Every structure is written in C-alpha cells, then in structure tokens.
Image (cartoon, rainbow, N blue to C red; front, top):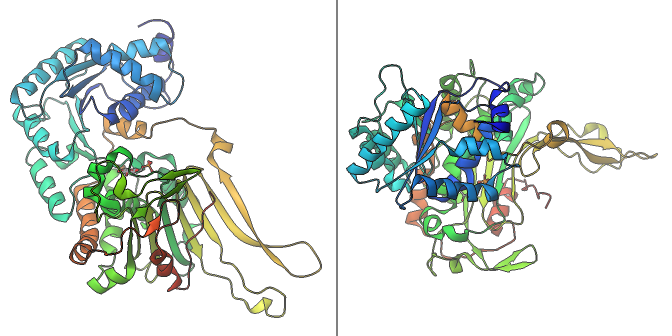
Length: 512
Ligand code: BG6
C-alpha cells in the first residue's frame, strides 16, 4: 500500500475497526453488488472502519477471472460510488477482490471457494472469520446455506466467526418464512444469521430511536392520551421498471409491508428497551408486532385497500400501465398500492389507529411518519373568528428530505384573532451536511463487529408475516375485480381516501 491509500489507512478511524474477515458475496455479478455492496465497502475503507486484514470473494455463475472481476468493479465504481474515489485507496481495495465462478448447487464450486478462502486468509491474516452475503434469488438461500454447511464453512471453532447476511424477501408468507428459518437453523445458530432490511441502514430510520429515547420531552406525550393517529407513507414515483418478473409474484403488500413498513411501525411504537443490546431492542420490536390486532375477514375488507396503476404521468412524461410493464402479464391482478389501518393492542396504543400506505407510481418519492396529536379544546375560541383548531403534527421525514418538523398554530399578526399553521423544521443537511452513503455501510460494519441490533430476528420475521398472512388469504380468496384503479402519478385509488374519510381523517397531501 502506498500514497494516499497508505495515509488513509494510517490515520485514526472514527470508531472501532471492523473485525478481520473475508466477505463472500453470492450473486457477485448481480446488481446489488455493483450498486450497493462494493461502494459501501469502499466507503467503509475510506472511513477507516474496514480492517486491514480484509478481502472479498465474489461468487457468481458468470465465468470471470480475478482480474476481470477487479476490472468490472473498477468500471462499476465510477458509476455507483457515492463520492469521489481516491485512486490509491481504490488500488488498495481491489487488490483484495477475488472471484470464484460456479453454480451454487454444485458441490465442487464450494471446494474452489474453500481453496480461495484459505489462500486469502493466509495472505491477509483474516483469522478465519467469514461473512457470507446472500445477494441471490431468494429460492437459493436455503441451498447455499446447506452447501456452506456441508463444506464445513459455517462451523465456528477456534475463536473465529462465520456469519450470513440474508437479503429480503425472507419467505413469501408465514409458512415459507417458518420453513426457511427451520432449514437454515439446521446449519446455523440464530447468532450467525443476519436478516437484512435495508431500511434499517437509513440514518433517519436509526434516528427514530434516538429522537424518542434521547430527548425527554416527547416520551411523556407519546401515547394514546395525546396522539390521535399515526400515518406512515412510503411512496415511490417509479414504476416496477425491469423488476416486473419478481414484483408480479410479490405485490406491494409482500414487497414493502412486513419488512420496511413494519420496521417503521415498531420503531415508532416500541417501549424503551432496557439497553441498546441487540436482543433488548428486538424484544421490544417483536412485542409490537405481536400486539398488532389480528384482523377478521370482514375487517380485512374494511380496513385494507389494494390498487394497481394504469397509464398516467410521472412528471412531464406519459408512463405505461402496470400491466404493460416488461415481464408483467397483461391481465395481472397484482397490487402496486396498498393502504391499511392497524391497531396495536397494548396499553400505550389502545385505540390509536396506524394508517399505512405504500405504492408505485405515486406523485413523488417520499417516506415519512406523521404523528398527529389530539386537538386542543376549542372552548377559548368560541367567540373569535377562528373556525376550528388544527391538531399538532410531528413528522419524521425519512426520505428524500431528511429531517423532523413540528407543526403548530400561531396568531396571524393583526387586530383580529386569526390562526395560521407554522412549521418548526430541522433538516439533517443544515446541521450535519450531507453524508453520501449507500445505506449498506452501517449494516455491513455491524455484521463485521457482531452487532445484530439492526437485523431481523427469526421471531420478528415470522410474526410480521403472520400479520400480513390474514390479509393475503382474504385478498386471494376474493380477488379484486376492478384493476387497474388508479392513474399513475396520483395518490392511489379513491378507496384509500375513503378509508380515512370514514374515520373523519385525511391522508397528508405531501409536498411534491
Ligand atoms: C425494496 C423493494 O426492498 O425497497 C422495492 O423491493 C422498493 O420495490 C425499495 O422500490 C424501496 O427502497 P428505498 O430505499 O428506495 O425506499
């Protein structure tokens, strides 16, 4: 190592450096590797959080030599790096990249992997610590783990660790998630399994806990006595793009709700954990999932809405209907929008509705959690020209404009009592500047240091699917006959608005 790379590596890291290890990426020639994983590892190296004793082995079907893999990564990083790439540091980094080609079902390929691991281990002193990242088709997760196990590559002995990061989707319903957990636990213990949800890599999502538990003023009012309802929106303006094949089998409910949206629900609703230890936090999250009121079949019909987009607009462009997207059947009944109302049956949240909605081809990309408080009593204003009091609203803006805002009433200057609504706004960027990242850095780093707090435990995944399964069953038994039912570029079908109107409420119309 030399030049700036050396300087980088010799200056003080910002925290405890990740353990020595080799990261094996299954599905290395795929999209996730080039868009997220390699740029994230590079960013960790730049932050001096990657051990010097580190290497990557890409494993994929495509035939490639080590050199070809390095060249490919060098090309890809130009497009996907989140910041300027330092040539010396990059040179240091790619020397540590290797590639093994093979079919994940072929035992011999694992022999080649084993040889490569041994060689890299010896060269870089990675101490036998292996981090496997499964970035393949979900159907292959179980097989890969069985093969790693059969090759003796999952055993933790002599002080080294073996960990596996598993991408979503983890199963496609309750039964399949249960079966997958059962299969992989024949080979791995729960402490070796890191089920990833990339929403937990987002700074603003991690900040929900800090916001709630590091500030004394919010917790006393964070309950049914003061909160009227919670609205969580995860809106995307894009369509399904090239992912029609996967998406058509999943749909908006499976794709977003039991994972990303439930993360937001649990972090918003959980009790303070007794510590920030992985299990202490996850125990509280799973209690919320277990407390989600089970919907009867009638309630599913009343409290959930499905939508599918037809042709419409995205900005100035005309965009096609979902049924005309690549790899989507022309008569597809898959939903691209879902809205639902849930209750959390515990002391803190009894009778406070949580309204959740997500969809593709909505007017903008926006993720936020809006906490609407109960209105102040109107009594004092009866004899004024004020018609009604608006409730206070606290909004956690997750993306793209990361921040927090509190909305309250103020007197409009003048001789009459007139009320306006004003915003107190905090924007991350104003205080902390922008921190370009892929969102995977923290999660990869946490796995390297053995911190599973931001990963899903088996019971969390199973309980989430259990909640969603009732909805899936009813939807399957009673297919929706009127798809498509919203125009691309709008806020979903009319029924989503009706769901709120029936309760005397309305969705926030977000800034676009
Ligand atoms: C993925 C879903 O998990 O999350 C996609 O499969 C979705 O359909 C994506 O687009 C959204 O992630 P983000 O980080 O862009 O909000």
